[in-house]
Length: 437
Ligand code: ADP
Ligand code: ASP
Ligand code: MG
Image (cartoon, rainbow, N blue to C red; front, side, top):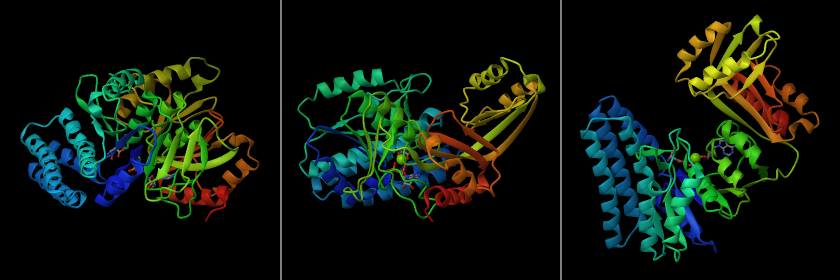
């Protein structure tokens, strides 16, 4: 059972989830995020330190500490437990204050980011202790590891986690941190923003769990982005493939990589609402449930690159050479469309864009468009859905579409549009494809 930031973000929410996690008849591993707002605050603290603004960083640390002091005063009541909770908060803020005084590095910034999940799990355990609920804290840094390519390996996670669990066979309730891990150098690292979902799925895969429950602040995966479109509805069932496409193409409810571990080990994933536990939510399994379009999502900060060359005409090996450039700079390609004389590619990681553009130049004319958004229409066998193409394009005729990609998978049609059209296109698709206004 994984609980996100808002699910643990208030003392009364932590009280509430203690009830949810003790409801289960099976042994349970609880994966917690940091309290909502904490990771953002820690990012800011790290950024201020990196800029050398120690005063600014100190102010942010103090503000965050005051929040935690207030939080624990409402979380636990027994004096001896409150003392323990205070000691936990003091320990972690002392650590941040020490970091403030030493020279900043990339590795230290990861240590700073880890404090959120370390705090939330320890504080939750304090509350469990106060309630007399037997449990064990499993330190994620002892089993959650990534390799030299920053990829988690379920095999090694499984070995380490199984050892920890075998030592504690009598326990029924375990609590661990989402998001944080150790890298190949043994340093503290993380699974990128929103990574607690990924932790949960990796853990579920590693222990062959009966289910991976992602508890959040909404009743499942909705048909459209509820932050942008007013009327959205939850999707009851979808396949791993559909959920993976939605997560990858911007549905914030799931970390982009969080589906593959569950899919590989065929573990059902449920998206559930902490604030409304009786709601059905979304069940994700190998079965899609029904044919047709299920949802749309948007992925921002996309750059499109077009390489145009008459030498591409009837040539072979041209695409390989282009792909090799992206491979060399370890830059994943999201969308690709080709004509006989040009190829368009999108990327979201622009770290090596200048080098990439330079190396593409010998292949032809290279153009780039920043600030684009990928709109993905996702479903099961969407090509078989009657009128789908008509409804899709009929509802967005006024929008300048830069690229269209279909056929790569039977679950997805992706459109590339200038970012300024994102809200409009999501709203128009809501009406045109789902009949929702
Ligand atoms: P948590 O802190 O629990 O991990 P997140 O904020 O990461 O929660 O994810 C939940 C949020 O994802 C929702 O509150 C919602 O605003 C957003 N979201 C974006 N797209 C979707 C979608 N298609 N369905 C449901 N939620 C979505
Ligand atoms: N706390 C981390 C974040 O805010 C991880 C997570 O919440 O999933 O990104
Ligand atoms: Mg999240």
